[in-house]
Amino acid sequence: MTTQDVIAQLRQDITAARDAGDDEAVRRLRGELDIALHAAGVDPDQLPLEGTGTAPQPPDAVEDGTA
Image 1 (cartoon, rainbow, N blue to C red):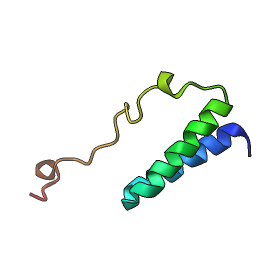
Image 2 (image 1 turned 90 degrees about the vertical axis):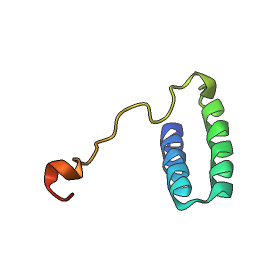
Image 3 (image 1 turned 120 degrees about the vertical axis):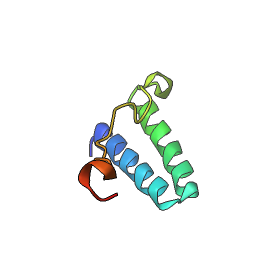
Image 4 (image 1 turned 180 degrees about the horizontal axis):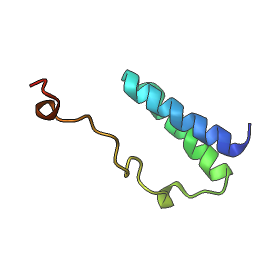
């Protein structure tokens, strides 16, 4: 795996752990991500915020007639 692959996998693992409510794993994985980012020469403080885009939203219940 390349460093970029490891970073991408860690981000996915963090999301999965967060979704599962596993706070201990989230903390551990964030530490590993920080180490990987520093090894790649990336300053984590200079990265854009996560989740700054817009996610697809379901249509309103009123619009689709389910309300």
